[in-house]
Length: 253
Length: 168
Image (cartoon, rainbow over all chains, first blue to last red; front, side, top):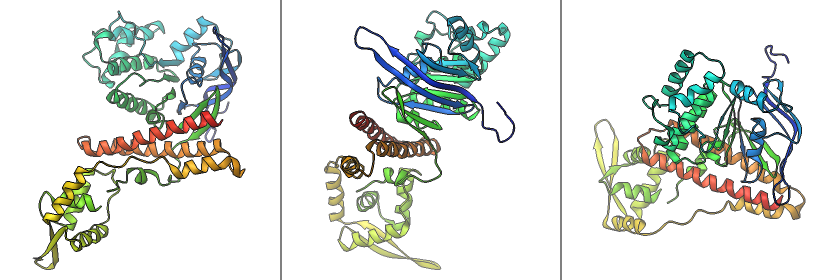
């Protein structure tokens, strides 16, 4: 792939014909049905859709938390759909950070250890891990909370710790699965502001959300229905929407 | 704008430009600014209907300005306005009619209509987020205005999702 001037930014995620069917007690659920998806470096892409549309399964496939039944997948240029668990673990540590709706922090480790652990596992020296952790926690407004256990933090704080943990190895891709799904409106605003800030610095983000306020922070919104991409819209068109903002804000007597 | 101007005048007499500024300060930059001509026209009508009365005040070297005060009838009108509950917002009926009539016309695909409408809502939502980010943090009223618009849009987007589920 060329990267000279004028060349399109390379794909961090490329999926072709990604397919996943869940087999439970009932009839098989076709969660993801032959999806093609490209996320380019530096893009912030949101996937929205009703619950049960398969959008979380799509994110899990891209993060290697589930394996596709069919289709091909590249992460940062590397073909990964044939990877087993061990190779995915390495890839996630190095290149893919993930935040979940329910934070998934290690409950018996301090905030500091939760953030440093993935850095250490990826081969950082303890000193470098501490330095990255300190920088991220300060940035996320968690200075002074290093020695707290996750259970002592509010939901919004826990999600910020999870964000620090996901970003500590400077991954090529940040995946976010309903990152504000269990937060109050202040927590939601904080997460949104932080995602926008990291995105502005070049972080590539793929986020699943049912919240349009969250989705509208992205550059692109993919509407996911019934296991398929129903629409893929670039936001921020220069053409003003009609009646747009002044219309929705207009107060009548 | 009638009710807003009347309510502002409960604070005390003011001239047109002060009222315009009062509205802007209260509602923040998000609110589509009323133009000053519109304010003067409305004040003229309110005066004619006896809800306010104006008095010209001389200014050195400048045209007179007209100071308005509420009449008793005006004060009653404001009280009645506060007493009354407000109407519910309406479903986007223009869009809904298109959606309802598209299949029988054969000229438009409902899903295409939904997708287009969703794009517009999302872009508007994005503009609202920007407005909120740029608004004075301490202006609670302005933030509530923007948040209200966002929650209405969210509801419309949820409804579009329902339409898509049913019509696909």
